[in-house]
Structures are given as C-alpha cells and as structure tokens.
Image (cartoon, rainbow, N blue to C red; front, side):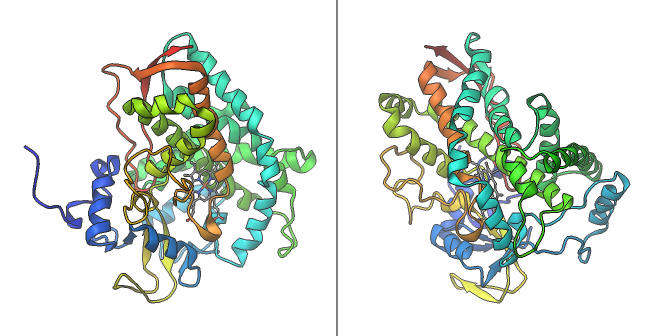
Length: 423
Ligand code: HEM
C-alpha cells in the first residue's frame, strides 16, 4: 500500500542513503514547501529553486567559498587534526585551497591562468583523441554483446582523457583511480576513522606519483594541460604554482572533478536510453540534430554533482528566511535543474527543448566549471559511439539493482550491466 500522507521536509534526510539514491521527491517537497530549508542534521541552508540558487551563485558579495589559508587548524575536530597528521607522517602535501575553494581576487588571478590552459582551441583539439578512446573501449567488448557499462566504459573514458592531459600513463590509471575513489569516499563524509585513514594513504601515494610528473614537466614541458599549469606564472603572484598547490588541483579539481563527474553522466545517460526507448529511437533518427541536446538533458536530469556549498559572508535573507553570516549553504544544483518554475515538464527528456544548456549542473558565475567543454565532449562521444555502433540495447536481465554509491554530494551508479546487438 502506498503512503498517501503528504510529506514534509522533515521526512527526508540527505544523510540517508535511500534519499541519496533517489533524491527527487525530497527536492520537490523542499522546492514547494521550504525552498530555503535549514537542514536540522547538518545545519546547512539548502537551496532548491532555480532562481534562488542562480542568485546565490552569482552573488559573490554575500556568498563565498572555503577560504585561502591552507594551514588554518582552528575549528577542526580531534579527528580532523589526526587526519592532518597523516600527511606529515607519510611525507605528503597538506591540502592547499583548490581553485574552487578560493575567493576573488585570489580566485580570479589563478582562474585566468587555468582558463588559458583550458582555452577552447586547446580543448577542441582533443576531439579525435576522445572519440578514439571511446571506440577503443567499445572494441574491447563489442564482440561479447554485453558489458558493465560503468566499469568498462564510463569509468575509464574520462580517466584516460584527463590522465592523458595530466601526465598519467594509461597503464597507471587504475592506480590513480584507487586514489580518486578514496578521495571521493572521504569527501562523502560517510567513513569510519580507520577507513578515512586508508583513503588518505591512497591519496598520499598518488601525490608521490604526481610529484615526479611535476618535476619532469618542469624539465621538459610538453603540450599537455598539466604542463601549462606547472609552468605558467600567475602575474599577480609573480610565480608558478607550488607542489602543494598543484597537488590540490590534481586530486580534487582535475581528477575527481574531471572524471568521477563525467563518469556518472555517461552511466546515467545509457540508463535513460534503455528506460526510454522512444528517446533512443529519436536520437538515432537524427544524431546530428539530437545528440547535443541529449547530452544537456542527461546533465540536467542526473546532475553528477548534486550539491556543493557556499558560506554566507553577511547576514542575508532569501525567500523570507534569515541566514546569518558564517552559515553554510547547500547549493542543490540537481534540485534547481528540475524546478518546474524554470523548466517545462522538468522530469522529461525533451530532445526539442529550447535552450537546453540553461541548467545549473556546472554552476554559474565565477566558479562555473572549468572543465564543462571537456565534459560535454566526453558525453557526446560516448553516446555517439553507441549510436554509431549499436542497433539495440537493453538491461542484462537480473543483473542490475540500479543502486548509487552513498554520497552527500555526488550521484554515481555502482554498476550498469547492459546487453546489446552491435551493428
Ligand atoms: C559532467 C562533468 C562535470 C560536472 C557535473 C562538473 C560540475 C562542477 C560544478 C558544479 C562546479 C562548481 C560550480 C560552483 O562552485 O558553483 C565545478 C567546478 C569546477 N570543475 Fe567541474 N564538473 C564536471 C567536469 C569537470 C572536468 C572534466 C574538469 C576538468 C578537468 C572540471 C574541473 C572543475 C574545476 C577546476 C572547477 C573549479 C572552478 C572554479 O572554482 O573556478 N570539471 N564543476
């Protein structure tokens, strides 16, 4: 018997893996009843409507990011301090603020340098490589007629692409994946202390790997994105990035930001294509017309980054809710992307949608995702490979439970077993 009682925001907890697995009802209830909702468990103010979220993201006077002092230990719990000590014990690099965690003008100075490295012309040059990796990965299981799309395609594709640009040899990507997985688990805030320590050790192993890459690129610059990041000076700082600053970028901003996210969209897109055969048929009927919109619809509907955060810099009021200076804000991009006040039939995949890029999956304003053009290419060539090479596809019977990894911020399918008839 279904529960017909009207739900209220208090019926949902974003720490509950069941809500993380399917958060859309919670988002709807919050948007309708409490668009600025102070979560009783985390204390955060959760923003779920499109217009409010966009305003928060654009308003850098009132909302900021983490901060710029790497060594600030004030306010850390005993456990967090013990974790910091592991970096010293294992000769690692303490977490410096990433690009994403900085505020202007410091952020702008660093971002200008990153924007030059990730300039559109440079990213466009990656097209043939991304397409060839997609086809090569598909070749490996084309003859089998089945695969775990997550493990055999959606995970390796972005890892190989970003790895190639970040000095990681293809045979080492699973070693790096171990570290990015560990980083993501730690970021998800669901680990015991022992698990967190193990995760940290994996990250420090990767730091030692990357240190050798930085040194090599300083000696012998090449045409990769990382080479530009290692060797370019930030004029206002009068210097290049330090090893610690580079380490922070490698793990969170480029490898996690650039692989875990695209992986999840590539996986969810295929789930949608199987669940909605009419969309698959429409896509195949005119890929040149529909592929790009399909990419945007997947990004909008299944935002890989469900939420991140901001800090209120001043006392402020949104939708009549008073938010005190210092309060933490949850920027629920995924909820805003299904706001019926902004999108017609928001839960539908609409390949004729006008202005399909107008979602908040990549944020907005000064922190707008640096890697959005690269991510869009990865999704495009993933789905193009299927359209080019597959006649029909379906879920492998009895093999899927469609569960997502428990996580506060990211949405990631654990596995997706599919079968297909190749062309
Ligand atoms: C589908 C894939 C991706 C999604 C959903 C995604 C999402 C996001 C979001 C939501 C933000 C934060 C915006 C804000 O603070 O409001 C962000 C920032 C960022 N992303 Fe992505 N991202 C993706 C792929 C990538 C890739 C491929 C890279 C590149 C290597 C990347 C690098 C970054 C960086 C460096 C920032 C920080 C930018 C800044 O603070 O100036 N992301 N991304």
